[in-house]
Image 1: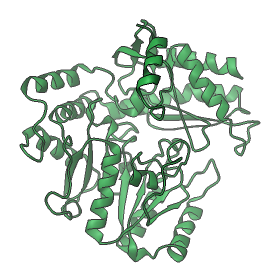
Image 2: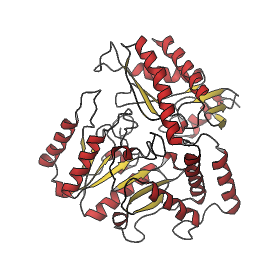
Image 3: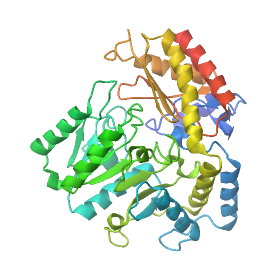
Image 4: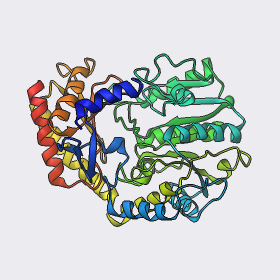
Length: 425
């Protein structure tokens, strides 16, 4: 069995829309390393898109999953529930920023979590409208694509999308979009498109994921919080990619000192087992009637067991602190490279262990260099490094290593990155 043969089989068996970044097929993985079916080793700077924050096959998560498999795999939490789901909900409620009592629900994917936030917000407020942001990413279902603010490749050919969704600019110092401009555009939406009394919620990623790892400032999030309070709108924080210690705190928006009305979580919640959740203020979460929320696989007992273990690992191994240390190590490598290539590396930024480098031509922010990001991802794969690109202009490489990665593995991976980068420029 080899990668080329498997890729041919994949292309015959799986629809082209579910594409793969590189023709590399995984045989096994451990912490921040992957081995393919041909025995080649890769350093993983993607972590399954910020899913295995605790590393591939963490022994504590693995043990929890195996123990649950010995007991049962599924009864449906809405039919015959189990203690692990209750315990994980209690953990989530306690970890969510803010002092207001919280409640949670479990679903299977991040997109489901976002959809349920919209349902809950509409049920609580009796209003239809949702405000989202340009460059935001919230999922691939019809509703969440409507919220997503990036066309290629997500929205092409899939419309029409739901009504009463409106987009405004995401504040971005590097791209010259100020907080004042974003808020002014929001006020313009209130004048031209929908009155505030018909808006159920504003949804925002504290750090845009697919959009390019741009971080909303604490001041902007506080202004949104105040605006929502003024008009009776809910504030939804999408923490799907930024949560579970990724940015140096359990959830990113606690760094802004605000409390969300509703928060989406997924990805890093269960160490690679499919699980997602909505966490929110208890009175808001209770707005839908019994039976109005749920899903067959939501709150999988295997996922809940893994999620409880993930909480333990984050606390015991101090992964919030590790995220900060990891981010600093990457930034040291990248800023040193930027000093030698200022005309190509336009920006280096991070929020803990969400790290990004943005490529431009001639040092000009208005001349994105997406070809380099694409070619660099491919070259890195050929040289034993998993890299992910992103950005509304396709010119960003993002680094999402496991929060358990060893520092010498970071240095080894960055050596590969630099070698590939210099060969292409």
